[in-house]
Length: 158
Image (cartoon, rainbow, N blue to C red; front, side):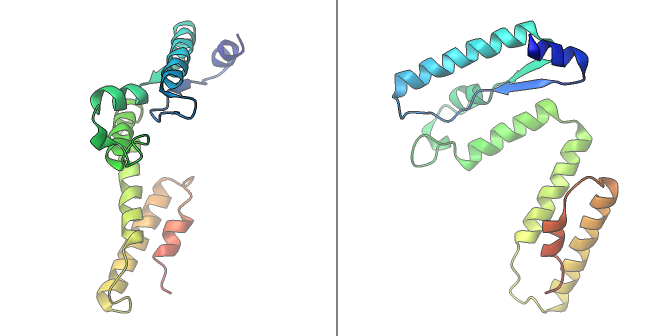
């Protein structure tokens, strides 16, 4: 009732998901039983509340990526390939084109910020830093609420 009231009184939307990570401390059967119980509860809530949705992260890993090559060496946690696959599916499901474009720009800047130059004092590297800093400023101008200080500081001259 409380969730239903909140959704009716505002633009609140609720998104549920079921973790694809196995919780095997209590056993494999118990893991599956708890996931099934949670899935049934989520289904009931989504059936009762129009603004409640379910994102199938668990099913994507178990069904779409049903091979142990999509797991880390512990065979419990998803690999980076699996995480990227699920994240991409999430983006396609819930983000508009402009949001996906903004995320791509941020990821590109993060990748550039992680770059380590062989010759940090070279003119070419200084131009690279200047160009990336301008990209940060352009992005900040378009999306003033973004917190880009960490990325910005990566491109400032030492």
